[in-house]
Image 1 (cartoon, rainbow, N blue to C red):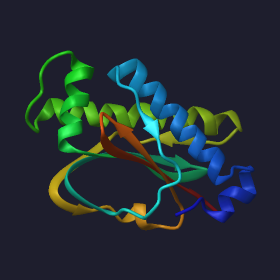
Image 2: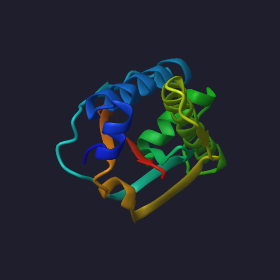
Image 3: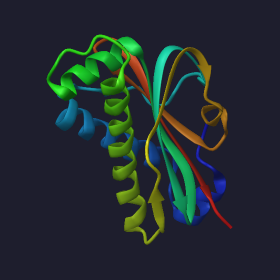
Image 4: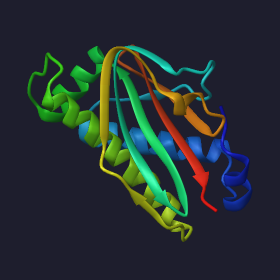
Length: 168
């Protein structure tokens, strides 16, 4: 899993630089909005595309560059994140959980958009999409154009992935 070569050549972005943006954005969102510390473990040791008892929040990019930023975490961690974010106990998959994970994806997308837009890139964000389930696959994480950063939070692992492609 690495950054698309066309993206690297046309923007001077390296996989490490993009991973740094993802790490900085994730730390910022978690420290200010969730009040939890995250520790990155970049690079990802082995590709992950199949999730069990997890929840995924995604926001799409469109414009000069297209892509998706996504956050994937076990439901147990998502419940803790939601509880911290809302300041109230959340102990089941419900609208609050979906909204919280979608909002985190949205904030991560906004941070990455801000970085990409500094270079004059035309980037627009979609509304967040949230999926959860006992067993599901996310194909964009198995693409060669995806930078995935694993994070440890309270002894559990979450993944933040960024896929970017240059539009012709």
